[in-house]
Length: 285
View 1: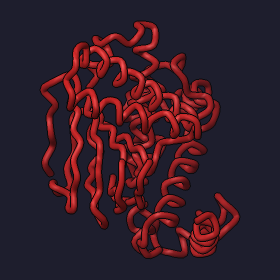
View 2: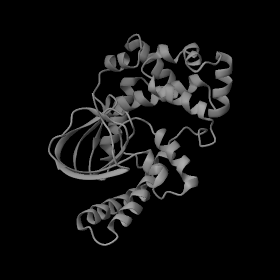
View 3: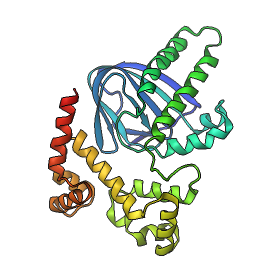
View 4: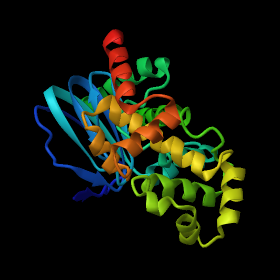
């Protein structure tokens, strides 16, 4: 799989596309994607999301992604890295908080807007960046710089609304490492057994359990189950994967095992959940 590297603190691109110019690939940097017009699918980490005008996506380093463009799409891209966050005008006391929030975004497809007012704000900011980028008027670079900072802060605010409730900047780095290990290995149940997690981090099972609960507010098994359930719900809502495919993807022994797990977590079978959320989407549209 192709992996891109960014050689500048940030790069701005905007394109009109009928087909995705690149196959599935990953970055070593962050990429913000705003849909100015058009429709299609955003594919990321084995799942997809139907996009339309006004949607805003954040791709984090190493996310595997591509776009399936269905109607001619105008897309705006802002690529940036940790160097930009640290060295380009964001208030020093906010840098660590921004790094934490961006690195702990859910690695799933979907629009990141959780604040309706921000959705109204972002469109004009992006159009202003494009206008300044094209006209190259006096002080345009300084203005673009400030607008880029504003966009990054808006992204962080929307992502922060959906971080685990007890996880914040005060959470110890080791606890964050455990969370990231779980997210990276959520498709491999064997790797998430307590003895394997504790072995990976060189600590005992009993200490790992107490430590995780202290710093996240829930047991490690509760967090694993919650995170896995959210991913399965996302598959059921936004993808056409069959239940046996979802079962295989998450390491269940068979569909019966998936059904039992999902009912225990949500009170509904996967098939019933899929029907209900898709009916809701039809009603909303």
